[in-house]
Length: 616
Image (cartoon, rainbow, N blue to C red):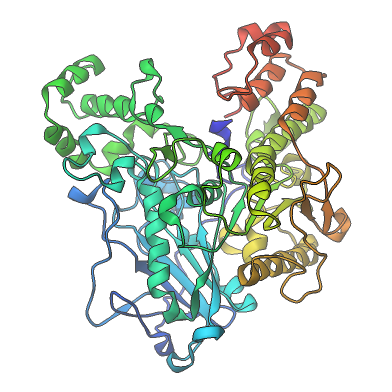
């Protein structure tokens, strides 16, 4: 379960389904003199953006985490004199190049970016400097945390201008350190004197907290209300929303939260640090440091690297780690085939930045989390995005014609695994949080699937309402970065615009008042809170077009006992081992794992390693 939940990338299906990157031939942005703003670090000026907004890109919210500050806690940004132009987004954080990195295909697979990347981007309705809203007129703020498996992605590739302009909000998107530069815990990097938050290894989480601190200190300059800050994010960004709900260090920095297709997945300290043979993660710091020593020529073998580490002092080890380039650090993951994403420990349960117990257990067993109104949601067909890439499930002819091998089995697998996603991302935390904080928990399921089809592929069958598909509806951006062939076509313009307007309205009303209600204009179906009182009580809103049944409340929820029953009773598998893999994907590594039941599913299960990743 952990592996598929960290994936947050819209992949390629043949040559007809791909993510369009930002074009490089856009005209240069021109300074808008009325966008001059005074920040705590200095003055900035932005540009005229769409929908009667101003935009400001590449604003530093922390000191560059380079050299001795690599793997250190974020520090305040360096003040500047004069007026700094905020017209370009700045560097992506180091990652392996792929579609979401916003680079040309010639850079796919290469290490791109700069460690000087802790920047954010702001869109706000256009105001003259003397007419910026103050006091009770200040606007709600929405802070976007991008997805990408916490190893790729870039905040600037989400254009907040339409959401800000049409819904009268201030929208912020942020960068944060990624992968092993964002989550890395090693004894040589721990503070020798007073403990530091950086000792936790949760640098990426600390970056999101630093960005929220910047918002508290500066958002009034854009007309934003520091007392009405909503965090929202998708996939890994949704996981980071859960992390901020759980982190005591984020208390008071936000006032509403939206997790879109997130998860409550975290890693233990042991997994982050120990060698694989002692229960650590395959990409734990112990495993990576030994590999880096071999790659750098400091040791001939990994065993020799262990001996060398035993001889070196903490200072020598730290100097070696901080002396490696991003290219060297990411070399062990160069073979990643998921658009640059790779799996490593992140969101580490250190006991300081994140609690020792898992996030779901925190919700279950205590009220010791940041209790704010929340929206939790998932997409009906989350897993089809990833399954569409599996050659055991699809046939691709001439690199273009993509067909399902066994549609019934494809839909059955997708349904079981997408329900698992919903249970972890929505239903389990919603039930627990509702018991603690009352009727301030809201849930949704995104069902829109009116995508295109032609001789090459049938997107409704392949993708359905797949992972990530709701993002364009939230931002109202169906072009540019989100311009995916065969997804948004001339035939579904009215359908997607209507649903997109409704979703922006709900999200904005939630940012304003902590309750999506009937949307900003008060004319939408009433989105009521999650109700634990009875199984048939309304739990979530379904977000769909009129052709798909429209927007309506529903009681359909997932519990792990019912999901277990569905998997056990499922039949019609072409390969019986797939039933074993689905069971393992859902339950392996959790307290719900039942070895006896697993082996009793069918004879193939004794031959399938439940710890293996069966789909990706």
